[in-house]
Image (tube, rainbow, N blue to C red; front, side):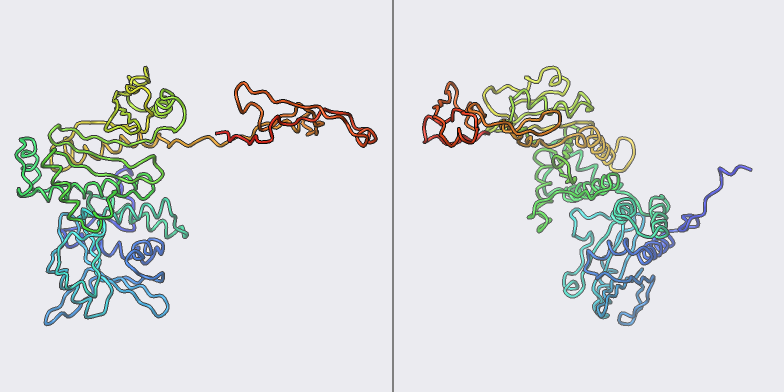
Amino acid sequence: MNEQAWHQARLIPTSGINGAEEQERRATSALLAVMSAVKEFGRVLTQRYGAPAGPIETYIEVPFLLGEKKVYPDGLIRVTRGSRTWTALVEVKTGTNALAAEQLENYLDVAREQNYDALITISNEIPAIAGTHPTKVDKRKLRKVALHHLSWAQVLSEAVLQKDIRGVADPDQAWILGELIRYLEHPRSGALEFDDMGETWVAVREAVAASTLRATDRGVAEVATRFDALMTFTSLRLGRQLGIEVTPLLSRRELAEPTLRTQALVGSLVSHGQLTGTIRIPDTVGPLVVTADLRAGRVTCHVDVDAPREGRPATRVNWLVRQLKEAPETVRVEAFVAHGRGTSAAELLRVVRENPAALLTEQGKELRAFRVAVSTPLGSKRGRGRGSFIDSVLDAVDAFYTDVVQNLRAWSASPPKLRQDGDRVLVEEQEVATPLVSTALSSQDGTEDGEEQQYEEQPSTPADSAAGGREEPVATAASEDEVPVAHE
């Protein structure tokens, strides 16, 4: 009997899923059940929305009467701690199904009537900027009820981080969380990855290539927001692989006003044909910047590294090259000098390895920073797979982090070392005090080139002779105005 064809029993099976409705129901039930069973996982998903730390109760398809009709939110979460109760309705979409504004507004009305705290939506839609919602609803309905969104990619990332990095105290609960991860990673679960640049992608890409794109053209803003969504997905994916929280890096103004970020991307796309995003990875030498050049058909990843603050220019270049010993020779290294504008020099790593002076084109100027970059071909297809825009960006980020970023360390000055004062010596591993002599070392020795210490011999006193002490000349500085010179 061929046991290799057998399917192992799973707590949350993917078999038997027939249609989108069954897919959504099973995903909702699996997620909410694990949230109530694994307290650490349930806590990490609810605390960000103001829920207290307490037992979590979850329900699915709870009926409510809204006017003369019944509505059925996909789920309900209730957290109780003492006299305080936090309650949220849940709406779930799987696959390519999008959230509907009318449906969400109905649930917001229900939550307001029931004095609930929030409505949480879960779908494969990834908002361009964290904290924003992918569906526009009437803002008047948000006065008393908060609206939050989680993408399935974010749910999966939180589950992996909780199980593998933060940890789950109970082994059985850890196994249950692992079963949810296994389910969400299965293609039939409906929890999909980011896989589409939008229906206007081809038209915008061709207009960029022809240099005819205008900011008012249809679909330009959609492409810009989808690129930011791709940066968010890239961060979640990389964070899941590294076991840390990786996030897109945006300015405070962009976080407060998401339209500013979209306008900046649209302007860059129209003027230069480029889309740029930045990823913050904890404990790395600097943010990872991704630039997709649609005109040139290249995607470039780069990271900026501050140069050492001491040593000769060639020594500073070699400091960087030593850290890039595993990097491909096609890596581009750029140098920046202090008080200079733009790049001072740029060469491929294979050239810099053989001749570090290739980056020292401006003699006499101090090296301030380096930029390490890798450029690879950019795909053009809107979906996923070979030759796609999305996969080329994801592959470029993964390769650049592996080959370059994870091997770079920021420069730090060496700790100062104590100078030998000559007062004590080590003899056969025993510390023995030496008699004070006129030639004992001083902190002032050698402070000025060509200057010698002057000493005066003073006669010994009768008290010294009586004590049996050996007569020694006493050293005195030639000038009482001398002060110690700080050694750098």
